[in-house]
Image (tube, rainbow over all chains, first blue to last red; front, top):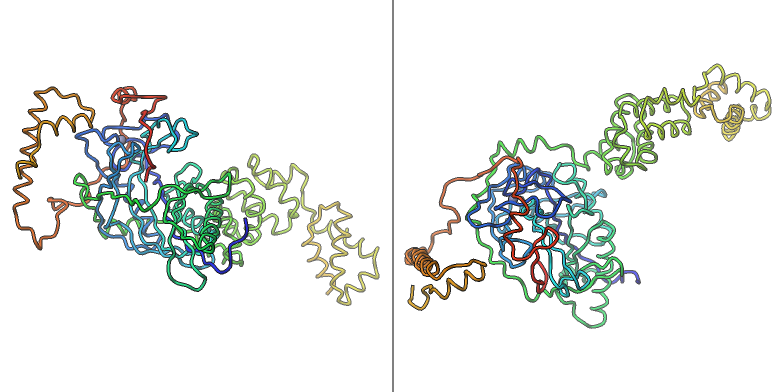
Length: 474
Length: 102
Ligand SMILES: [Zn+2]
C-alpha cells in the first residue's frame, strides 16, 4: 500500500480495556483465571440467576484507583449503571459499567518523548463471556450457532479512554506500549495483549492537514498486538483519505482489522446507534473512596516507568530512551544493584540491553548481586568485554557466581606484572612506534593494545593496557 | 394505571415463555395478580409531584459496600449446564446471533 498522503492528518483516540489482576471476579467470588475449562468459574451472580446479588471486590476498586493515580486522574465518587443489550455473552442481558459518574477522570499519560496525551476517563466495568461462532468460517453473521463460556463474564475491567490527541499509528503504538508498562507497574495488569487481558479499540479519522475540525471516525477493532495496532491505524487512515479524495464520504462504522490481508473491513454501521438504556444498578451502592483510603493506595504505588527511566538514565548518564528496554523488561533491579555495588551503571545498562534482554525469561531469574559482581569485574578490568559476555551467558544459562565461572573457564585476569612484561616486550620490538606515540601520535595507542592482545591471545584487558600505556608515556 | 395498561395473564404467559419458565395455568393467574399489585405501587409513586427533586439511585445513606478479594467455590459445571436447553463441549449452545456484540 502507498504511504499516507501528506495532505491529510490522522486523528486517533484509543479505548483500552484492561483486565484487572484480581483473585476473583468483580461482583462474585468466582476465580478470575485465563485458559481454564469452560464454565467452571461460574456462580449464580455471574450467571445472572434470579435472586443473586452482586458485591463489589475491594481489590478491584484499589487497582482502579491505582490506575487513576498513575494516569494523574481526579479520583471521584462513582456509580455503577446497567448497560442493557441482548447478546448471549452476558447472561444477565446487561453489563454493569460506570456511565456518567466514573471513578477516574481528566488525566494524562506522558509518552517517552515527553508528549502528553489526555485521558478522558478510566472507569470500572465487568467483562463479558466468550462466544465462539460455529460454522460459517467463525464469522458472526454466517455462523450456524454460537457456543458461550462464562468464565470471563464478570471479570473486572478498567476501560481507559484517551482524548483524540494521537496523530499516527506509531504514536498510538507508543501510547499503548507506555500504558501497558504503567498498568503492569501498578500491578493492575499482566499486560498480555495476546491473551486478551489488554484489548485496544481505535477511533480513527482523517482531516486536511492544518485543520482542527474532526472528520467522521471509524472504530477499528481486533487489535491484539502493538504491531497490528500501528499498522491498522496507518491503513485505515490511508483508506479514509482515499475515500475523501475520490469525492466520497467516510461512513461512521465499526471496522475490523484483517491481519492476514493488511486491511480493515466494514462491520456494524454506527447509524443504527445502540440504545443501551443505562440506569443506575439498584443492587450496588455508590462508591466513595475516603481520603485515607486514597492516600494508602497512593503511597503503595511503585515508581512509574517514566520515573524509572529518568532514574536509570541519570545513573548511567544517558538519554531516557536508551534505558527504555531495561524498564520495559522490568530489569531495573539489575542496573540498580550494579550501581549500588559501585559498578559502572552505564556498563550495566549496556550489558542488560545487549546481552540480558535477549532472553527475558531467564533474565528474570538472574541474581542481581551476581550480575553486579560481573559488571564490577568487567569495569575494573578483571574480565575483558568478550570474557564478561561469555560469563554472563553462562550465568543466564544456569546461574552462579561470576568469579567461579570465570575461574572455571580459565579467565584469570592477567595480573599487572604479567601485563607489564608483555607490554615491555611490545615496546622493545617496536621502538619507532613507541617514539611516535610519545611524541603524541594517539593512533599508536591502538597499535600497542593490539600487539598486547595478540601476544596474550585476547586474555588481556584492552583498557588496562591503555591505562598502562598512558602511565608509561608520561 | 389505565385499565388497558394493566398486566394480563396473556402478558405473563408471554414473558414466562421468553424466560423459558414452565408455568401452570394456576401459576400464571397467581403471578398476574402479584405483578399487577407490584405495578400499582409504581402508580402511587408516579402520582407524586417530583418536579425539582433530584433523582435518587439508592435510598440508603451508605457507600462502599465491599467484599475481600477471596475466592469462593463456583458451581458444579454439570449442574450449571443442566439448566441450559442446549450444550456442546462444556459450553452453552445458543442460536446464531444477528448482528454483532457491542
Ligand atoms: Zn461468579
